Image 1 (cartoon, one colour):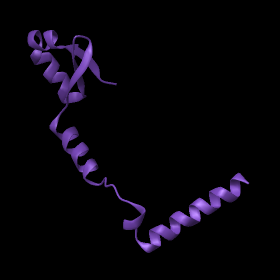
Image 2 (image 1 turned 135 degrees about the vertical axis):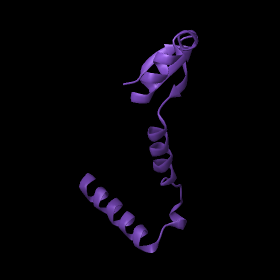
Image 3 (image 1 turned 45 degrees about the vertical axis):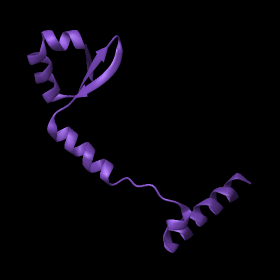
Image 4 (image 1 turned 180 degrees about the horizontal axis):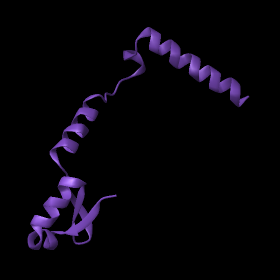
Length: 82
C-alpha cells in the first residue's frame, strides 16, 4: 500500500519522501485529493511494458480460431445457465 504525503510535506521533506519512493510508490495529495504518484524507474518501466501488451479490438478483428473459442465459451456458459 502506498503512503500519502501532501504537497507541503513534499516541499519540506523531499529527501525522505524520495527515498521512500525508491522502495515503494508514494502518493502526493493536494487539498486532500491524490494528484501524483512517485515511483522508482524499474516499477515505471514494468508498468509501461505491461501496458504495451494491452490492445483493444472488435469481434470483426478476431482471428477465426479465437472467434471459434469465444463462441464455444459463450455456448458453454449458456448451457450452464439453463
